[in-house]
Image (tube, rainbow over all chains, first blue to last red):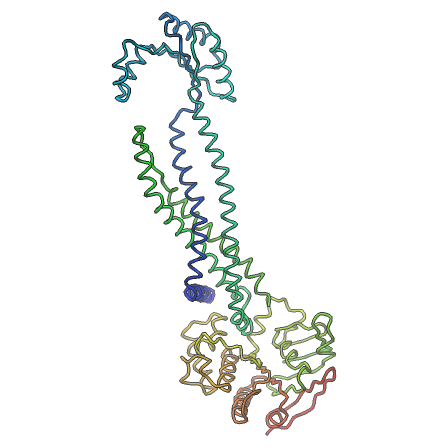
Length: 302
Length: 223
């Protein structure tokens, strides 16, 4: 056990010595990997930060039927009753929003109150807000219901309120798949960079490898410093990538906060949790070691 | 200690470098391997060190059959065989002492033990006080003695050397040979490949002569 620990310590010292012997080359390789890793990390950060926002928004489609402005007061109630009777299985909740209540609610928003105060009378119609029951094909059912209600008497316009949320969901799904492909490409970049670094190192250490074999070194002993080189390069690159992403997020969040405030919201981009980042560092180190093993096996057959 | 039975060695489809070689070396013997350049002396030593497998036949070293040995087991055989090649294969970016401790690092000795044994090995080859120098600062003879120190630091049962006195003046060559003789006298089986007949006649108890595919074994004359 002690022997193995000593051999690992020796391999680590040799690795650090080799990295230090070519500081610019080592730094350039690590920087290339770090920049490549920073891209999916930033993409992941945006996704992770956007998901809670989309969760807060209703993804259950709501259909709002606006009645004609001159429709009698009873029309909204009648429409709500008809929806309850004819669509009882497809509908979870139906409520009437009176035009006076809508106006009062709108006046509480300072951005609108000034504009509404100059209007001679209430321009808003009565509305019926229909929330659909959960189930499959929600989006299609919502669209079908909206089309049907749109044909009913005294209905001026029907709006599918959560369509944009669904579009956002679809966009996030697309982004998630895109990010996965990006992560695979970055993994390939890490593999290729470590492979090439180890290949160059193996060729430059040819004499030392030969001597080590001559005096009885096992292949594990010969490979070990290269595996450390791959793992260390991967781990350092991942840490640099996290630092880079943090550095980029600071000015981005500054600009984003001003934008979000103008919409009366709070939004900021946050890196994934520390546990996930640690897993990322470990995975990148493992990927580096794997690539190093592949490279050293191929390039030390002499 | 070393036994060759009908050993052939060739590389690819080239002609046999060694053809039907048979000999035996007992423990503690001092043997010269002679022959002209290209006769196969270096190849013979590489087979003994487990650096190359035989193409055909049986090579037995220190009780182990090389042709049946798995590649991953060969490094353990090499630890029992101290090898000094014609090109010293020193690491010129490391100090003298770091070159000598390498076989002990490979076997996982602590640095304290390794340094103590390396200093003792350097003393035996008369290189004390040069531990922190770089090999490039040493003369040709000193570099050869450094290679010997590295080969003996692991206390091998067999010591093999390929043309260890080539390119050295007579005095340096005699000094190197004296070092080999000292190790042989404490029981280390020693095989030296050389084409210097004058040198051989002073030290060897036996000479194995290789010339193309002919192989002869005759007693030498000790000084």
